[in-house]
Image 1 (cartoon, rainbow, N blue to C red):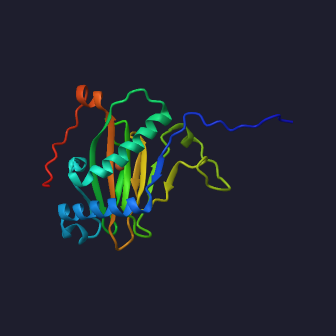
Image 2 (tube, helix red, strand yellow):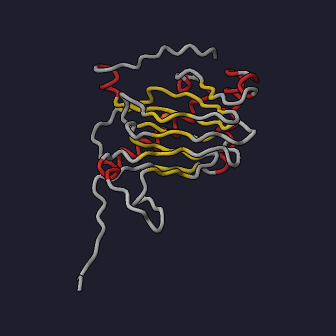
Image 3 (spheres, protein in one colour):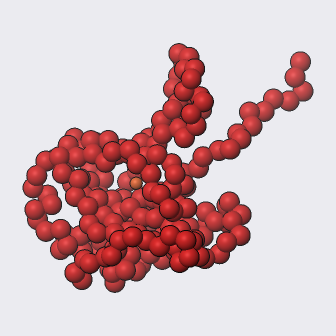
Length: 213
Ligand SMILES: [Fe+2]
């Protein structure tokens, strides 16, 4: 009957996932973890329902320079994938999230940036997933029962991540983090990237990093 069938994805929304190799993961995460504990202190681990965050200038610290190189290499891959001709893109902010038991990160976007993302340092078993929301409004008007929930018919999606996982996604994509039921800290590094010309001429970053090094 049909000579050919296709389901053509139009206007797809991508999350780019990278996994560092084990040796790099251990080295980079040990460096990051030690710096974060020195910045936030032992108090960061002691209270439940606490979503600790550092200031947003971690990318300026010496301990994050190797991480910056990893992030910029992954970003270059995304720019190539999307055939973006603008060459100058930079990390505009970078901060840590240390979630104790019960802590959540509510739904949000990363305005005034082109890409946002997160890198995982510690992901204890059953410590909550990152959740992405369908950015399209129209598909929510009709939601038929489905025989199986899939990426193609769902309005939200979670991804399995582990230490060394790096995610990049459009900064406008709404995302959140589920509660951490685990007794252990869930540690991730969030960041933003924006075209340098925009940051310099249109809307510079608003924060003034003051983390002691
Ligand atoms: Fe975020």
